[in-house]
Image (cartoon, rainbow, N blue to C red; front, side, top):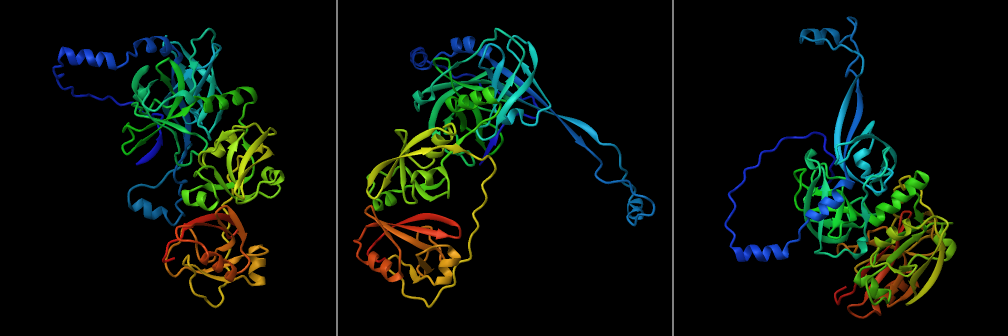
Length: 482
């Protein structure tokens, strides 16, 4: 199953075989009319603010091979097979695609998906009254897949912006767009889920719906029954390239934050605090003394970054930002990136079995892709000891190993003879052991093994580990046999 963005490249003609409608008893029809909403008024009022977008991209293609002279050793080979490659001038081709959008201001600002207008040489906007305009792309942001285009017109109808926070799962929503080139098409469904995480889309908490979304719907609005835009239709899951019941919309508050920045300064800036994080599992929460599995566990803190300057430490669990709950680790980057660089936020962190507040000045996120952490060479093991209660063979680090790993202390995971333990690998270095909210620095293999021996059955133990240049946490629940 693929996650795809769907502006169309060509328009086909489809013939549908319609079955004869089944007989519906008057009583059943009356019940249905009472349950199902009527979308006609919404369509009449909001439809004129939805636009069709046709995109032209000019592509230059040249000859695959240069001219071959008669002196070329391949000339005779091609001549025998009937055709000698000939070069020629590059030709220009036009690639066509289509999408949807909606008007957010009476003076011609229109919002759509960034992937609809990406690399466009011409963007043509068509209104419901059949007027057409050549639009200027004001700006776009690939991270949120939002673009703003402008047409020269006035007194245009515009949409009403809603609040996606008030949207409920099971609530009716409708889309208006241009699927397969069929302008001003309305489809309806319900909200299937909120706050969906999708691969490579960690800054957007998508609204999942079962509204029929197809190629050409991209960039169109998702309305609630009050006629307010609550999302922008952007993605579908599909094996065929068409609708299969899973559609995803960008929440309108996320989109309008991007739109506002593009209109104001032509680009989007995002906040960062300089931490690497991971999810807090139930077992990890137990070992840190946290009653609920929530928040973002800080793996490492960037040297000289905002979080380090403010006093955030590896092993802290960030549970709130300015009073907003961090219900899971993926919520933290969504909150922080929406903060303007230079602004202070108050982090509520869980450390040592209690909550404390830390004020952090947010910096600007660098848009270049982060470098892949370099995996260090696992330190050479010494003579093996017996597995401990966790099934790990531990040994003390030599001075050379400490220098290579750039640590002052720690314990080497020499081997895991019993099989996988969490996400621990041989060669990892244990920096600390955390249980019941108490953190103990790992100073020797004997110390760590003794500490594990004293823990009761069912206790959750979190190890702070280092692998190459990366630090992270792994949590394991101890059983009798471990």
